[in-house]
Amino acid sequence: MDLAAFTSVSPGDLVRISGTDLRHGSWEHSAFVPSPLPRVPPALTSRTYRAVADARAALAALDSTARRLPNPRIFRRPALQAEAQSTSALEGTYAPLSEVLTADEDRPPNLDLREVLNYVRMGDTAFGWIEAGQPVSVGMLEELQALLVQGTRAESAASGALRGHQVVVGRRADADPRAIPVHAARFVPSPPGPDLRINLQQLLDWMTDDEVSWEIDPVVASAMAHYQFETLHPFHDGNGRIGRFIIVVHLLLQGVLAEPTLTVSPWFEVRRSEYYDRLLAVSTGGDWDAYIKFFAMGLGASAESTHRRMGALVEVQASLKERIRGSALRADTAHALVDFAITRASFTVRAVERGLGISYGRANTLVNQLVQLGVLAPVEERASAVNRRFFAPAVFDVLVSDPGS
Image 1 (cartoon, one colour):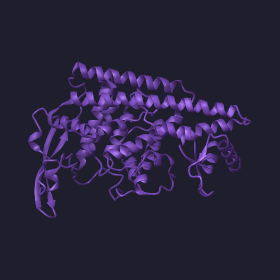
Image 2: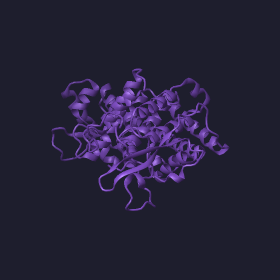
Image 3: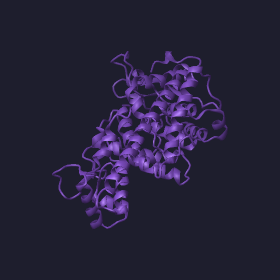
C-alpha cells in the first residue's frame, strides 16, 4: 500500500502491522483503520446534493410503484438473482444471467453458479430475518457470510466468523514485481482482533441511530455506511458482495424502500475501476464529496433501471393472465402459477407443488396446460422427465434484457 498517498485529512489512522512472508521473511507495514463515522454529513457541493436529490426521487418512484402492486414480493427474487450475478462478477466470479435464472438451485452444475446462487439464498435468509424483527448484528453478518461461501472454493474453517488474519486488497499497477503482497497491495484494511469487531458493531449501531437518520440524508448515509464496511473489510471473503447487499438493507431500515427490489451492482460493475478509486480516495484524502456524488448517481440509475424492469414484468404478468382468461382454463391456480413463474425464473413440477400447495398430479397437469398455451416452456426440450425444469419465456426475456433500453 502506498503510505505516502494518505494525507492529514484522511478519515482514519495508519497503524503498524508486521508479519512473516515465506519467501521474504519478516516484514513491517501499516494498515488503515477508519475513524467512526460522523453523526453529521460531510461537506458536500451543490452538485453532489443534486445527485442525492435525484437518487431520492428515483428511489421514491420505485417504492411508490412497489407499494401500489397487489403483491410486490413476487419481484424480490428476480431482483436478487440479477444482483447476485452482477455483484459476483464484480468480485471475479462470472456466470451468465441466463444460466443463473435457469440453474437447479439444489444441484448447480459448477462452483461459479454455486457461488452466485448462494447470494440469492443469503438474501432470502436475511430479508426473512429482518421482516421477523431481528436486528442487524455482527452475528447476523457472520451467519450470512457462512451461507455466501458454503460449498465454494472460499469456504474454510474461518467461514462464518470475522477474519482472524491480516488481508490485503488488490495490487498497485506501479508496484515492484518483486515486492511482497502487503507492500504491493492497493489497500491494507484493518488488522484482525477485538477492535475489528468493535468497529463493525459501531457501524451497525450508526446505521440504526435515530439521530444519524435525522441529520443525514438516507442516500448519503448509505454511501457512508458502504464505504465504512468495505474499508473495515471484516471477512476473509465476500466483503464486496455483503457490502453492496448492506446498501439495500440500509435503505430498508431507513424506510426508503418497503420492499427489497433494488438491484445496485450492475451499474457499479460497468464502472468498477472508478468505484474502487472513489472508495480509496475517501481513505487517502477524505474525498467524501466525489465518492458520494458517484454513489448517488449509481443509486439513482439503479433505481430507475429496476423500476423499468418492474414495469415490464407487470406488463408481462398482465399479458400472460389475459392469455389464460382467453382460454378454456378457469382455475385460479393457473393465475397463481404465472405469479410463481415471475418469482422463480425456472422451476420443477415439485417446486410448483410446494409453492402453490397443490398435489403433484394437479401441479403436473397445470404446468402442461400452460405449456400448451405457450405461457410456459421446458428449459431444455429433450430434458429427462426427472427434475425437468420449466420457465415463462416472456418473463425470462424481461429478466435478461437491458432495463436501460
